[in-house]
Amino acid sequence: MFHCRDIVVNNAGEARSRARNLAATRDGLAAGAFADPGLQPKPSAAYDETGPPTAAGRTGRPGASRITPGEGDSQMTRSRVLLGLALAVVVAAPAHADPAKCRKTILSQLRKFKKVYLKSQQKCLDAENVGKIAGPCPDSAAIFKIQNANQKVVDKIAATCSSADIAAIGYPNDCAFEPATTGIEALCAALPVTTPAELAECLKCWKGAELSEYLAILYASHANEICGGDLGETSPVCSDLDCTTPLPDQRNLGNTGENDCQRAIGKAGIKYLLSREKILEKCGLLGNNSVGCFADPKVQFLLQRAEEKKAAGIQSKCGNRTPVANPPFCCRTGTGNQCTASPTRTDCVDNLGGTVQEGKICNAGNCDPTPGQQEITWWENCPESDTCPGPALSNLGDLIDCIDTAANAIVDELLCEQFPSGWPCPTGPGSASGAFLD
Image (cartoon, rainbow, N blue to C red):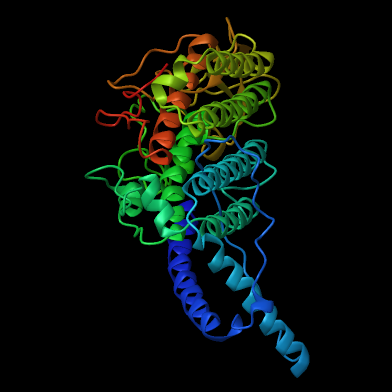
């Protein structure tokens, strides 16, 4: 089974190889290709200089040029010259240190990566829930989008930032953002950070783990699938979920009102995390630290508006559904509404040859509607908590509050990694919430 960690590992190796190749090309070009002043490349117009005066900036990823053989000597010569020019621009771009531009680029490119990473998997999970694809997620379409974003992000950061920029910003020379890590976090912590491209791979690795954790919280009925079968510290995909008992029933929700609610939770939750991080990043790029940003009235207004939009999006499709780890169902096994008691949906289908009817119970041999409010297969205790079990979730408002807690905590982690100073890292075992929640 493919997991997103494979993208990270493959791209880390590719980044190191590209760095070596670029260095060799730069040395060769320095010796000859640009000896004639008339061949000196012009400054690239690809960089956006419209950011705040004190902005610091970051982001990027890779693309590759190709030379097609067999097109004639003259064409091959032109191709080689163009390739040399392209590589030279890539190498020469960060020759003049510009830490502010580098920081801005890192942030903007990583924001693109996070958006693609979350939304491509959201699309996959929504399709799997209604049976449009077999799963597991990410499927081939999602993998392609993520890999493409990976390449562009790394290339852009490598083209914009120099090692001097990285040092001036204050990034560490290793990827060990957390001590004594296991699972995917151990893989991230072991990545080298000797070039801007390797720094990009390092940051993306940690962000992929955190974002996968968030997806597992949002899509509770697919948490195991998202995290590679392990929700703890040894997960090969996710940063660990703090509290996972009782585990929600792991299944597709089907083309139901319950799944309409789940789609709204996924869409609104992802939009909220991306909006919250962007708001705080913009504030940080102006030279503010976490304390100053959370105290800023404009930032407070924007964060509150993002929260309200998230809540409205979920309420519009979920009504008053109650989060329940294993909602009741009825196993219809005869004609009409005749049923047989079954402990699980899988047992009903595989062993009893029945049909699962959601929102009903087997009562005296008949499938009857469930009394009371409708339900959503979700966590009964918030997974993001310093102590377990997490806060009990007894209604939709509690569910929305839990998404707030999880998103805010994970954004704290992401900002801590992106701003080496001024944004303290969360503390506490298994918790991302102890630093500077508003």
